[in-house]
Length: 76
Image (cartoon, rainbow, N blue to C red):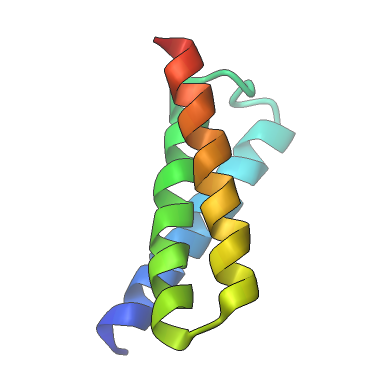
């Protein structure tokens, strides 16, 4: 497995894990853990998408990170 794919797998696990934990009621939408898992996971997926030149996924993950950062700022 190459470096980019490794980051992609970790990013996918973080985003999917965050979604699973909020769906199961472990996290609430305003929890720091949920927002950080989404932000870091999307950042890793953005890196992979840039390397693979998958521009729709670059846009998706860029927006996902932006939303996560707005949530983090509101928590402060």
